[in-house]
Image (cartoon, rainbow, N blue to C red):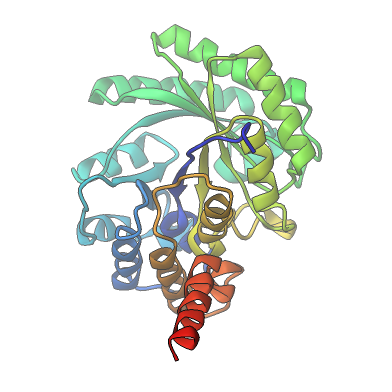
Length: 327
């Protein structure tokens, strides 16, 4: 236990990653309701929407209205996703979001073609163009990310050497532009990761780039989300993306869609029981999870939202024992 981190940062992505895959319409007002609820839980960062093509992802068509409607809480960062210069310009135009740039590459060309209609070479050029946009608007860039870092539904296993190659490309892009990369997000976009592959890939990146902070974006399609997060913690990872109630998924992952990010309240519960600080109020987070399930109108995969926290159960038992003794 002493080898595990004392504190981890959990970055909430439910309002964006979760709602993007829902088939039924979700009103702007209800999206805002969930964001405002999550703002009261102690989460330090919430990704609220995505500035992407409304034709490709219809649920994100109201992104500007969502951003205009939620109430900012001091101390909470509110972010959004974009995939190109047009999306960045739309995000900037809201004048309400915390904008930070990222160099996003993909380990699988077949997935990249489906997700962004680009080849690997075209994507490198697109990232160079995006860096120019970041510089033009004075947007800080200290982060990089790799999609499909642990496997792909169209290409299969992704070799660890391939991941190291992509990280090298990101550092080369950063050097070209005079950027200082500090954090790398490894995304299990299609839920191929297992605790073993988490340790193998994270270990290889750490060995090559010991000063690079690593973040994990995990999906729970095969029930490995929390186990993979634990494996990451054992490897020194302290930043995790998560989605309240297990919302989420990639709309371009096809037949084995990576539906369900690692569940925020389940991850917070595990940390709480191991004495790892998150800064999150689990009971308030469970309320947000139940709200998310109500909003989408169908069961969501989160476990702790249904079973409740042990801390609450312990208090109930202690109160009953105390009342029995007083009687």
